[in-house]
Image (cartoon, rainbow over all chains, first blue to last red; front, side, top):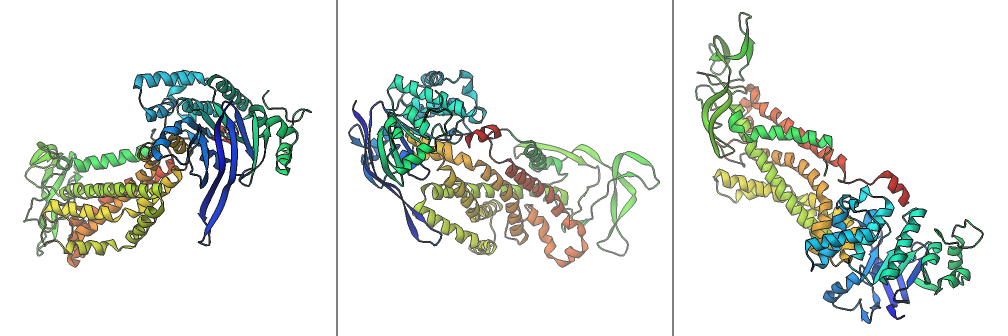
Length: 269
Length: 351
């Protein structure tokens, strides 16, 4: 397998005003480097504030990195011209934590899934509609949900809808920013299975950002552990979990709830 | 968008009130500029159903007025001359909605002019002037609010969405506008113009000035909404699909400002009607003989009118239901919040 994404020395600083009126710098990403193989899943785990969500936003080109580079198939998406970046953007898509927030609450399902197709353009309205229904079927949403508002769907259905929407663009990379954390356990398992099935069928690459080590172990091939904007540990999923080297990883492993005697029994299996 | 019952209720109230004003020609018995020099400052006529002898009449009637002996401006009812009220009578010509020519009026009487709200110094019917005056005043309020909100929307959207130096500059200018003593600013603007201005020009002038002064407050509110809306995940997601700024503003961000704008509109309209009244009261608004609510009240500047002719205050009472309607609408719009709801059950599962 070849490398699809290569992140090199990524730094993101936020300037913010402190109450005293001065400028204060917040270092969210402090020289992050990693690689992801095409068709594999990388889990990024860490506590809140460890910089993993900032990493997700930078990878999805929704935040501009302060320095460093993100290579996608040999092109640095941080450096290419605005026009080219707009063309590359659809290839990296993101699923957000809270589907109630990532779907426009005023729009109906049909409009939500049609939006990326409209923005990409190039096909007729009828064709779009046909594609939308195909996508809804693909993620297991019944066709009658097309007329519903997001608030009329369940949490799991909403996340399926968010997945259907990004599939419309046939992305190479899917960034799952805590995509399962807002769901309850049984729904988490369903969505996780859907994601794995889609990965098998479409060969997408996942960057799975989570604080849930159990789910990370279940889904990921590789794990990187972040703390304070740096990667403190990386390796194959099982190894990192079985023999955590860093204190922070040990703490995260210890935080996984255990229902059986076997450590880290993945949820939903 | 489903309308809540309380919002619908206020809309109906406002609809009826505005309907009366829009169809002023029908509801007003006379032309607002028509003078009756023989009866200046006539008090409101009383509508009777029982006559002097105590007989009941199914058709309401009014008595004619005559001058009380030894006075020159005191009237009394002349019980010998009664005139029944007639409904759907033919009277002065007017154009309904400015187009349809008609002579039909809701009520009137034969051989006598009825003044249910009295007359002014020239014997003009106050009721007719009140209903017609509403057209000028309410239109000024609505147009002014429209200008203010469009300006506020554009400026607030630019400041909130683009941020940075644009935000700083626009918000400092907004603070300046909030600090302006706008009434005196209007005097200054008026001073630049010739003494007499055509009514239409004067109307649009005051609408423009009133409308442009007030943009700062709605702009700040819109900015706040845009600031939070642009960070929402569905806006981020659309940007990830390759959407450009104009698309994001048009389809995702500005719709979020809808409820703020509606509430502001409901607050601004009565405020601007009052502003028009203030200007006309001071003689800086629409010139006579065009009626406007401010013009109706401008005779109250004279002390003699103030103390002698109580019915000259009546138009102010007529405005209360209008203002109440708008403010009621504003508060029930505010209650409503966003047009969508997130179920409590699903919110619970998110945390």
